[in-house]
Length: 142
Image (cartoon, rainbow, N blue to C red; front, side):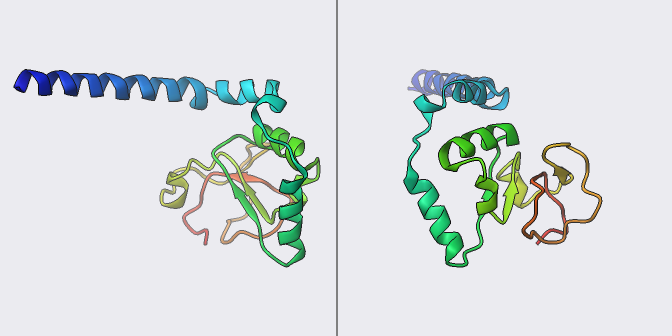
């Protein structure tokens, strides 16, 4: 019986390790982004409904934000494909490379401009509509 438990634990450890390696290869190293951007039609469903829903929400005064762990280049290409090149006009705030879930409770990464990666010159105390996409987090942000 103890031998079976030990063997089962080894299998689970091996499975966890393999899964973690796969995630690192595909997601963290960027392979997934590269594959999807090379063939958007294969991986991303494009329909007028997405744009229509977002536009409807904006028209009715809703504040929209996009927060993702993905890099800006990937988000921009995918959103441009799905809803058009002016997709950023639909969102009040866009946060990329957020490092969720740590984004919400850690203050390790400083807030940076997503395109230049330069630190923002002003302390980010709250999020408001603007042209800058950001990544990272700030302990004072509300």
